[in-house]
Each structure stands twice: as C-alpha cells, then as structure tokens.
Image (cartoon, rainbow, N blue to C red; front, side, top):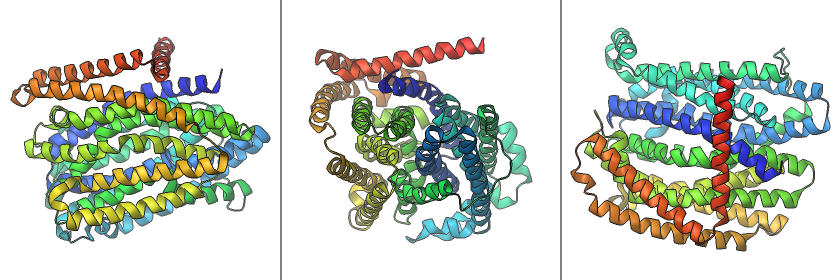
Length: 544
C-alpha cells in the first residue's frame, strides 16, 4: 500500500472512533453546561479541569508522542525486537517516577497552581472551589501520561483505533458521574462550601483516566511489552527522547499552551462572569472539527513520516506533508466559515438548556467567532510540526512556539487593557488565532529554506479553489440564516431541523462547486470516507 493509502486508511480508523469520542465529549460538556451554566462553580471546574486536560493534550497529541515515536521507530527498524522493547520498558518506568512526582506536587500545591490564574486582579476567594476540585482531578495526570505513552507505542505498530477510542470511556465515566443518582449522594457527604455537582464531575474525570490506561495495557502486552521494572536515566535512547521532549512542549503543544494563557486572561476581574467557561465551550465546539479530522490525519502522519526519514526518503516525506495539508484544508476552511456564520444557532442548539441561558450563548458565540478565524491555522500546525519531528528536530518548533507564545501574551494584554470594549471575552480567542497564523507561516518558511520547495504554488492554487467554494457556501449560509427566522424558533426539535438544513445545504453547495472546479481534494476526501465505511464494516464483522 502507498504511503498516501496508509495515511488515509489509518486516519479513517482514527476519525471513526474520534467522531464517537467527540460526540461523547459534547454530551460531557453539555452536562457541565446544563448543571453549572456559566456560574462561578462552572468557571472553577473549568479551571481545575484545564490543567490535567492541558497535560493530556500536550502528551497524547503532542510532546510525548512527537519525541518517542521517531526514536522508537528507529529502534524497530535498526535493532532487534528485544532491544526495542527494553527501550520502551525503560521509558515506561522512568515516566512512572516522573508522573508520580508531578502528581504529588500538583496536589500539594493546588492552591498555588490555581492562583496562577488570578494574576490579573481576580478575587482569589472566589476560586476556593477550584482549589478543592484541582486536588481531586490532578492525580488523573499520572494515568493520562502513561496512557499517552501506551498510545504512542501502539501507533508505531499502526494500531490507531484503540488509542483513539480510549477517550470515549473517559467521557462515559464523566457522563455517568453527572447523573443525579451519582452526584446527589456525593453532594450530601461534602462539606457545605463544596456541595456542588462539580465535585462529582471531578471524581468522574479521575476514574475515567484510570479506565483509559487499563484498556491500553492488555493491548501493549499482546504486542510484546512486558512491565518488568527497569529504571534508567543514562540509556542513550532515553536521553534522546528527553532532549526532544522538552522542546516539543513548545512545538507540538503551542496551541494548548496558548489556551492555558487564554484562560489566565479570561479569569481577569475585567472579564464578565462566565468568560472562562465560554472560552472552554467555544474551543470544544471548534475541536469537533479540529479533533475529528486534523488530529486524525496528524496522528497517522508522524509514524509514516518517521519511517520515510529513517529510509532517507525526504522528497516523499515533503509530498506526504503537502497531500495531508491539502486534504485537511479542504475541510478546515469551510468549517471555519460555517462556524463563524452559524455560531449563534450552533451554540443555542448545543448548550442553551438548564442553567445555560441566552446570555451564556452570547458569551460563547463571541468566543467561537474569534477562535473560528484561526481554525485553518490551528489545523495546519497539527500537520507541519510532525514533519519537523520526523527529522528528530524538536528545537525549531519550540523556538517558533516560544515566539508565538510571546505574541499571544502581548496581544492578550493589549486587547484586555486597551481594546476590551471591542472584543470583550473574545479577546483571548482572537489573540490565539493571530498567534497561530504566525506560528504556521514561520515554520513553513523555515522548513522550505532548509529542505527545498514544499509545493507552495500547487497548495496556493488548491486553497484558492477552496476559498471560492467557501465563498459560495458563505453566501448560502447568510441567506439561510436571514430567512430561516431561527431566532423565533422556540422548540428544540425545530431548531435542530433548521440548523441541520442550513449545514447540509451549504455543505452540499461547497462540495458541488468543488466537483465543478475539479478539486482533487474532493476525491481524496471521499476516499477517506469510503475507508471510514470499510473500517466500520470491519468493526461490525469483528464484533459479530
């Protein structure tokens, strides 16, 4: 099978289970919105939840995989299986010690961790709940980090579906603990200040993290992994992973770090109540697109590129990147347009229930607008950083990521103190979007100077066609939004029907025009969908 075919096949398996995971993730977030709305308790939960979630994304989708996979791939290709598994076992136990220490420090210094968010004048007394919730949630870091390593090992053997499916079980545990039959008894035994469903949600997240790791361990054992204690800090492979992993925190995970910065600014006393939650939910809506498609392709991309580099096939590696960028942009560009134009109906349908009132929808829709502006850049970064990591270069993305972080902080400061009346709670999202475009362009230019052309002319021509198709789709969205009278619809089934009609109608226009313009990405996208269908059929057959 060609590399393109392998990537499509692997991405299809990842995308299928990721769609299910994102649906469960939406149900999880919907339960948070339903129970807590955009109240102070909701902001406290999101702050406490964001720290282990940041580490989950940085390890599972970022630095750990980016540093471990290229080195382990070289072991598998150039050394014996026994040596490769000995290396993996040493990494596992070294990580156990590091994560245990990090977890202990996170629990002990929970108050200091939460107070990082209050540097812009927020009343610290309002975050006592966040301190308490952080002590419950933070141990999840231990299990999430080990799960990320297990997923990276399985990815090297082209096992993608199971690692991608484990968040489903985390979300299911979370949803279970959001039910009244669970959280009401927990509330009754809590001290008076902490009698909130948020406590039960925190416990559910911790249990879900344990379940995630438990599911992956048997799969590792079946592949040949043993868990005999083997601690080493002097092994050359370990040291190489460690050297790569530090810089990778700023490279692959710059989006997550910028999200963390956004939360600090959104907790400012200048921001309206509920700003932290609105940014979180807006990001989650965007992740429905970014996570389902861009991350699916990027997860399959790193092992493929690592094998190409190990074989000295640099030109093929660059072609693989160009193909991946085109096919992801084909989805990311219209998705950004749709989220921008239909942001209010989308947020209203997804979250405006229970304690989540129209004012909460307005806050979240504003944040979604500014995040959506950067969606194509966020997706592109997911693809260009694996190209650097496949060459075992984590320092360049780290350096550019640091510049991007500085830019994000500077823009956040300017928007908060000088332009707050224009952007309000959307200012952190706008800062992150601008920083993301800077990050991608800088990485693209640097790689081209080092390794030669990356097919920029063909890429620009393809994006121009996509932009034309997206413009026609935008016109359809505007007309539909104007004449559908969505704001006057008060029944949820009717709202869902209207929103679905607008989304499917505008999407049909986009694909139809892409077919008329003979966009080759359309056929590649349809091939990916056929691969997803085959994966689903195979899974059904296996289950039978």
